[in-house]
Length: 333
Image (cartoon, rainbow, N blue to C red; front, side, top):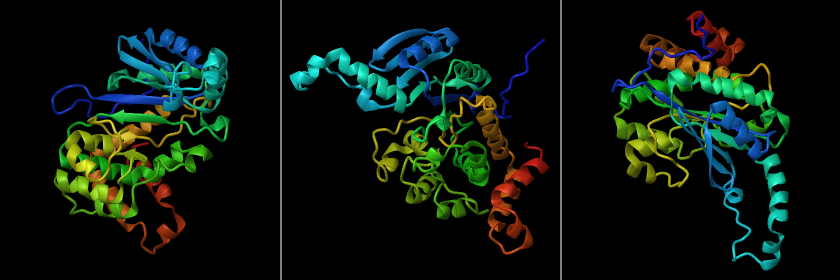
């Protein structure tokens, strides 16, 4: 009997070049030591570990190279043998690093970064996350200073302005619904790196007559959102599309060019037995389906524009509740 996948698939599985779409996944967690996580991930993914630098290990697998790292550049790059350090510090050597390691692994997230995976292969992440939970991995809710996320970098079907606008509109419509479902932890709610898009931008984006070319699309977004700190970060995509235009607004060496969206909103709630990777993935698929159904997208955009009108429905329902009802009525959930 064929096992049913927990991860749903969107209708649009291929790019306009006929290749299966891919997605990169980033998982932040704690509760396991760095070496312990490397060993466990190598076993679960059937990978061969190769240490690249302190706290950065590549796992060579049949699906591509995964990376396990400590998500803190200063600690990853720390070298107590550096002659520029005072001799008294260098003499501490391994003893100092043991103290630093113990502290770092407690308060700095460990991260597993996947290679670009075919959509049909994402079930491996579902299995990986569940087994890491069983091994003692912890997520955001374990301590107030944890603000761990699970990030998706889905490849788009194509890069035409028309397609980009549909995906952006679907996200704007579903933002409150997605936040309610995946923003569980108070520590992440007080951070700035998962902010919604500026309200003036979403109002412009959701108009029926919004049909920009690529340059206009980028300029409109960057006028109001010149930052990586958005729940759906478009800067890696814009770096891929027109790096020169992007750099007129934002210059940040952390921006990596790629033909994907960068979905940063969800918490990593890995130690919750009721939470799974598919919890996040399947809600993203709802956005995928909406973005590729023009009639439904037009309908929910009209509701979005009407949400501030003074009427009984708007007085008694939040936009998130309205979205929830609309998705259920139209068979999305």
